Length: 534
Image 1 (cartoon, rainbow, N blue to C red):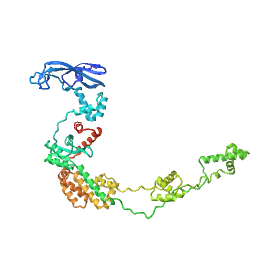
Image 2 (cartoon, helix red, strand yellow):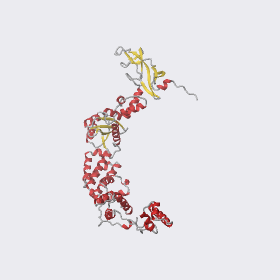
Image 3 (cartoon, rainbow, N blue to C red):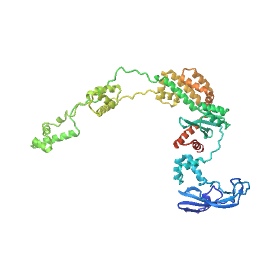
Image 4 (cartoon, helix red, strand yellow):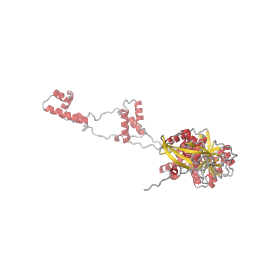
């Protein structure tokens, strides 16, 4: 395969015209690129006059991006020219190569750009760590300085503006974020949320047609003063949140009706103790280590007796006590020794079992709790015996799990949720609650009517809905309606138009992430740059 030879200049500086690379050498582990400008002259930075009168030259060593994990320094020979204008205060000036160097700069422009991008994405400390992994040794303060030197874009005036507050210090200091709803990009961050500050910004940016906001009085007043011709759109999420709070207050007021009225049983239930332990005829054990050992010893003792050995001799040979050998010898069958020794034994728990049965029938099924109660009654045994018996009761007489009554939060969620998103049990419990409480039934009816109105953007029907609520005896909903009336035009626009503040809330969450990333020590200007430039 024939490989095409590419000039070194094209490989190293493809986007910087007017620079030629003459040599690349490695000096003490640093790749040094020797380069020089090829233009015949340069414009004077003071008056702009073109000059080709060369005064001298010298070497600059700006640091560039590393190549193959090797640091790169450009040995750039720059020229000093004489200014030809007699009106210019500069006598000489040094040429600057656009896209590569700047005055008093120790880095190339592309290295500065990369550090700025890293700083905007990760801030100082994390950006410094990433830069070191890329072969660029910089401190966190240097990364932040590169962020502060990134040029800010010109502020544009949006047609649809989203406005919301964000916390610089939660509960104490708040700022304002402005977002272009059409492009979904932030426009500016203001240092506070006061009416004069927001009004001044709106007045300096004429042409705003729609303002999406929450139901803040300060933003409503600032919008009327700074952009009097704009349409205010109240955010639907905040409206629904306020309605949910009103529904919850209504449910709290009628929470006594959430619990189903049940008839108490006339007396405690009784347990069929015949199921607890099936009756088995007592008899000798036929298996087990002890049973096998006694049967073996019985056979051995009787075999030795048949050979003429005495009891004392058999005891010495088998290393058994003489009384044990005597019992084995006198028993004609080993079953005589096994009957009654392990069968029908009494338990230390027997005197307390009637109390356990009573408590189990009353619904107390926790072994540790029952053990504490028995110990208070004088039970001398350990908890293991009680737990084993309770486990036997649990397997023989299982308790039905107690039916959980719906809470205030449950009923509020069911009323404010779409009926299709309720399962069968939730729909059944909600129907029972609404049957017991006519006030909650009317609240659910008004809530679903408002949801249909908002989902279908039928803002023209809002006045009729408000009238129906005002004529009903539901204080919490009437308070909600009173709040709507104070900002009625924005609410009607909010439930009629497709605009909302979801984009603004998303950027607000992003601000929280950036603040946590900088450990809460970010100044407003640094935070503003990271929000607007990233």
